[in-house]
Length: 263
Image (tube, rainbow, N blue to C red; front, side, top):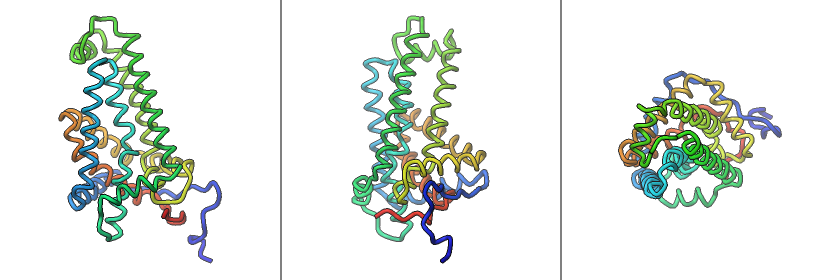
């Protein structure tokens, strides 16, 4: 029997390929092609993300210290919100016609490990909102009564240390989430593997390709920042493109052919 055709051993983690530092540009190009080819089912994800972001801003305006943490925490759950995009890319790559029903089917087929990953991301986002709000409550002593006055305080006033602390803590949390979710959601959707295996494969993909994955994380962060700066409307394009690109990154980085395909 060909060893490559054997089922993986218990506790085994998929092999990871090493890629060039500029490979993320190819993933983005592939994601852009999928976005143009797939039409409304793809664009719908970006539109819903933009609407969700605007709703968060509207709610947090009632208590503005929640806003920075809520908006950045909203970005943390992006990998699980893109589940339908991974499925669309998978169906498209198989040469089949894509439909909105494929997206709904992917969510209905959502495996228990994928659900647990979504719960972990929600808990991480919630923890960040609480930590971010607590930082503002404990360290801001000036008369800050709106988001704009807080920005002035943080960037040009006496809050420089607070802003740096907020960035460092947020960057650490985002790095951990990125390592865990870089390729694990597409793996869990497409392959019959447990959550631990998918997370370890994701962490290994990041660890074995530090420059390429650091570049990829930077591109994602810049796209998210630009999308927010454009009043969240940038998410209409950035979310589908990055979601499709993530599926291509997963196929490029992880050799999971020995794990059975999910049905």
